[in-house]
Image 1 (cartoon, rainbow, N blue to C red):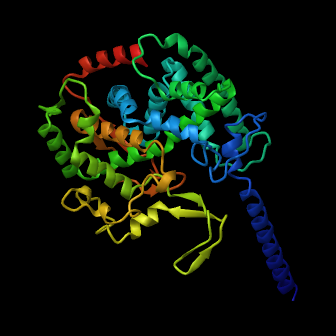
Image 2 (spheres, rainbow, N blue to C red; image 1 turned 90 degrees about the horizontal axis):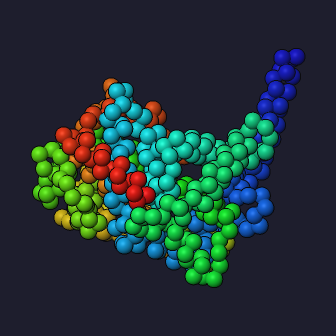
Image 3 (cartoon, one colour; image 1 turned 60 degrees about the horizontal axis):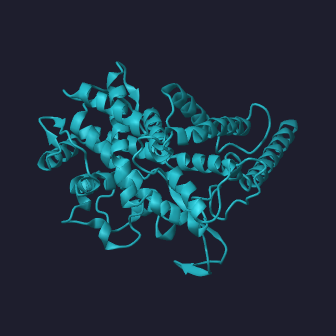
Length: 436
């Protein structure tokens, strides 16, 4: 009888603990996304968190002029000017990978690559290698603690995230103040230049605090998702050597690849965008391994979906991955098949919202053209001048939180680029030192 009473009390205590935990979780979930706002915003900032933005105004409801700014930042002319700089950053990174005698962690190194691209090309900062490493480590700590519970106590992830944010602000302020001094010889306007010039044209001038916050948001937007897609691209090229060889055939046919080496001469944006099979490969990587699982929208009016009424004002989450997995237009959805996007098959052309790796509608990703260009250039460099192989017996399992990535980061051994490695290195150092 005593044991039965004890079991009953134990069961009631367990139930009570579960109810308390659920209540705490619900309470905390109402504030969880606030960290993405406060982690980049100074406490003195009076701006409210925009609706549907998940804490970042450039992702959510943004004023009209800011959309105009990003239309300039990601225009055809801007992408054309970014292209040679992005290519040089990728080449520089691949040299570092191939010079490492040990296998590299592709996911972590892809994060470093996308971070360098954002800092050097998108923002136009000229920082030393030591400063870049310090910035990357600090930003990594910031990102690692973005989604922690908003409990401001010593040794918590929240406190670490705030501390990392403050350190980033100091480093970024220094880089912004030094930016005019390093403008000599620069032949393009980066995103930060456009942002500041557009603000002046709009009759306002951004404060240093606003510039620092916008800078972190730009880096954040180009960081995790680009690294995820880059890792998935490398994994699929390793898994499917026939795809890699077909990509090389296209490069050879267009005169970009000759005798196993990328031909000298600057790539043009129109040339890169005209590579049909390359486009199919990138599309298939993003279909099968979409970095972001979905997005949020606010119902502007009451509507009905499959017999369920969604009231006006409700927040709605749509799933990109489920859409790609269940869409009837894609055949054999689990297979990696770039030819599904070929002109002969065009499986993605049978409906508006069957394929949406960057979201859909007016709220689709503002930087999708830049992200796609980056992936295309990475694929060209991998196919044209790199030799790499899996360093483990089997391919790792993939996890989807916070973005798609391999459990072990994907261990890969890279080898020398090509016979012209020294010439490329000299050109890369000269270009990066002069224009970025």
